[in-house]
Length: 161
Image 1 (cartoon, rainbow, N blue to C red):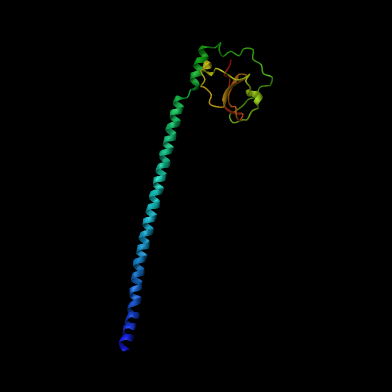
Image 2: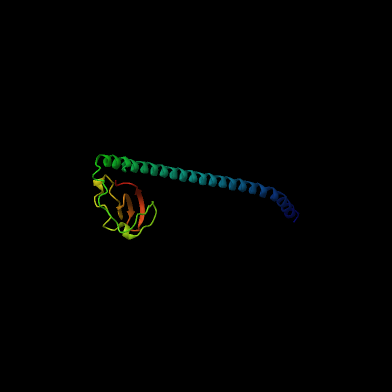
């Protein structure tokens, strides 16, 4: 019995020393695990940031390419100066009074009806309108209108003489 009690006392004395060492080891392991996870998350954030920056740069390049391909104001202005008769006002009347539209404004269907649309924009050196878009004459101004929603996309003031 004496041996049993002595062994129990030794075990009780030795046990508290062994447990903190195990706890310290597991604490270090947890800390290493947390650091690894933190590094992994940071790497993923960096990857996403790089991906977003690449996409932004791609979009900028695409927009620059579109601007290069798109017509400039000088295209039709130079053409208009050399072909003044084509841009003459003529006897054009509308049943409504003049309004000074600006891009983003919603206009009524009567302003961009088939009577006021320009069916041959290439004749005036204008780009072909997109899907659901039309070039519309409004007195001396020219409007690019989204025909589905009735919104003015672009205004060229004083297009006609």
